[in-house]
Length: 90
Image 1: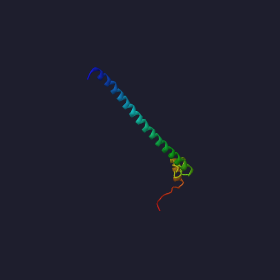
Image 2: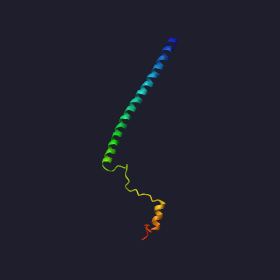
Image 3: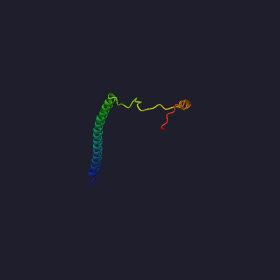
Image 4: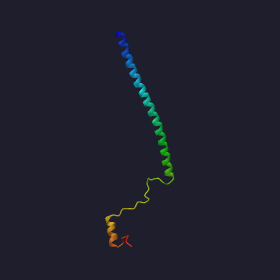
């Protein structure tokens, strides 16, 4: 191998490496675009489900069904003094 051949191999090798890097970057970008499209479709579906749930009256937000007000010690003391305590004994 003479000096000319060695000099020509180096740029070709560098060019091939750059091309490989660019190809990998393009492939990664395509995968990201596909993933973004899938995520967008899933988000649209989730928004639709939330809207249906809100319109159907089954939304969790603002629901106080099943919650009982916690009794303060002062309120408990008043009930004890008034003999108004509910017991579970028969």
